[in-house]
Image (cartoon, rainbow over all chains, first blue to last red; front, side):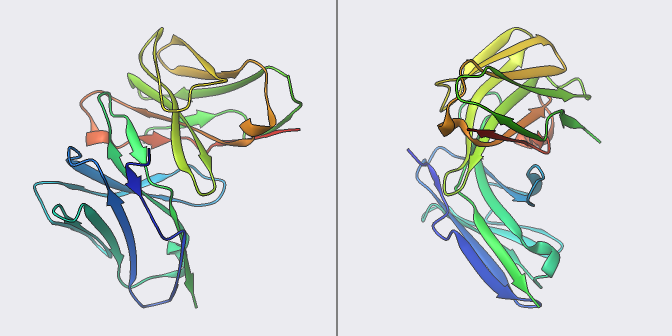
Amino acid sequence: DQQVKQNSPSLSVQEGRISILNCDYTNSMFDYFLWYKKYPAEGPTFLISISSIKDKNEDGRFTVFLNKSAKHLSLHIVPSQPGDSAVYFCAAPKGGGNKLTFGTGTQLKVEL
Amino acid sequence: DVKVTQSSRYLVKRTGEKVFLECVQDMDHENMFWYRQDPGLGLRLIYFSYDVKMKEKGDIPEGYSVSREKKERFSLILESASTNQTSMYLCASIGVGRGANVLTFGAGSRLTVL
């Protein structure tokens, strides 16, 4: 039962352009969302989060948008840089104890 | 900075072997987690511990057990490794009331079962 879904397994973008990574969820009880970035042979690192009381959160080049009615969130990276090439996971807290349920990930490749 | 250390980065084991994956965190965090990452499946929670000697099954606990004898250390045990347990294993921790669900992950342990 995949409650957080990333339907695009991969995305290729040119350097300097915008990258848009999408995430859909099915559980309307989710009230907080996080994005993690993962490089090969490293653990995931926290990137940005958003509470359901907001529809946008921005941190430098990274912006997350939340559309509660559509149960959809997206991560925008502007401008994209080669160092942004990584796997991006969206996640939401499920149950207590800070447990997170993750999406399947999107491999972003930023080309020169 | 919180550090989560997974001592074995790469392991190769044979089917039927007992495997221990060790994880240590240095920030006195109460909650610790074991996830596995597989292509197309994302990160899936295996087990969770919220205190010493306390554990809770995650979404895919079958074939695994855990041990938390000390607060800083959380071990994942494969009693009899099978080829379908070939995966990247990720340990994470978080302190209660801190960081709004922001888990800190270790670098991962890549296990291959032959």
